[in-house]
Amino acid sequence: MAEPTDTIHVESPAVACDGGGGALGHPRVFLRINPQEGEIDCPYCGRRYVLKEGADAHHGH
Image: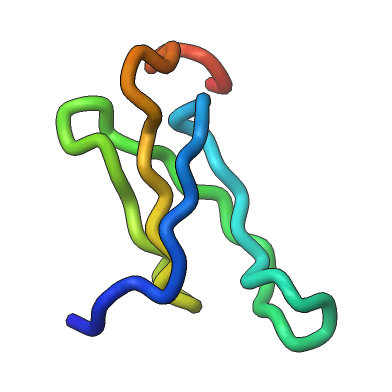
């Protein structure tokens, strides 16, 4: 698997990714970070979302 293009640190395990860049992005997808893993990669653009240390793992359900 390719290396992630961007790493974004987030406060909530529920994230939405549209690739950024407006029309150059991709369809919006909603992802949920598993607190045990602490990160998830977008299947479209490869952005990596990392749950910040001490973030509320139950927020954003």
